[in-house]
Length: 459
View (cartoon, rainbow, N blue to C red):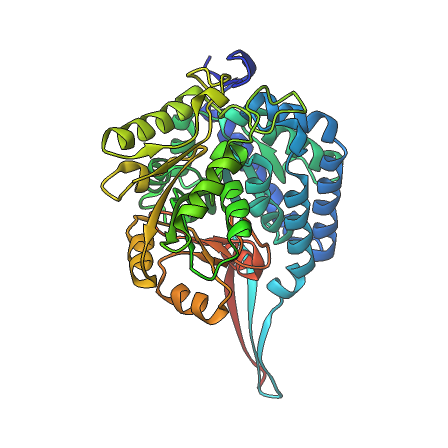
């Protein structure tokens, strides 16, 4: 029997393990979800929304268990209180716009014809969720998918093994039927076989580019719809008229919070030459104030990375950049807790360029590179010189300037004077190797449903 294990970054122990489901058992679970979907979809929309929100409320009641579980599984300090703020904000928003997003579009209602477009649920939605924000990323799809009348199968990352189990428990205890929302413990091979068999009507995957390619390969020829949120290398650009202190505070937090393990975290920053020296000095001071340590300690502000192998990637990128001429400015003596394993100190690099993997490949850790630029044109070229495109953070007092640059940027979201935030009213999407599709907003409901046209002649 294959066991799926969560190795805790806190101390390297096996924090949780579950047996991987056999293919036959998994296929039976999907069959039950398919059977339950029709009756679930026939329930009034308001009832489905209320049940989902009761599930959200029930999960909130588990806060005392959820927060330390997250610390043990992926290293986020308990002082930050889990993910409930964003989890609730997203759930509440999609609940409020569900009726609008799913409303029929009436083209004509005359004596001769009724013509309208309605939205129908896909059927069974497969959510493959990541470990970095395991509740918030999952709810992006789970809540609107269920509200729209789909049934949902969730498979969570091994690193956050207990999250899917806990989410389903909360929703079922709140009244969502057991077969409507199910958590399955699946290894990669079984997941790929289920996908290849056309078991699902829609797949939402959040994870690596390699993982996204594996999902697409498995689904080849099945015509299964999917949404993919993959890699990122999100830039910030600080213009000469920016609020310097606000830019430092926000961008450094965006680069290092959650040990830099954020889908839309800031990984590279371009600063106008007039502010460059001051920005670098203030950024190094800001990052140097972190307290690296055990995430269960309420004094800790920076926990370990989720796994030692993730920290290894960051160290290798930093070392390679330094070997090619970059300078690391944060003093290692300030972080004796850096153990060469999962506990990794934050770092700021200068004298970097795009010949370095550190400025082009996803780092996904608490390290950021800063480059000096002379103009918008130079910054624009550098920001677009990347195979990813999720968000860009622009710092200026000129909204028109930000909008003009935004029109030229190859990205899913353009921020001005903020970063590392998901607004549930705006579609969350990416371009290039960051993926395809979109979640949240009214458009997120459209991705989780299909249109059906009615052309009814009355005479």
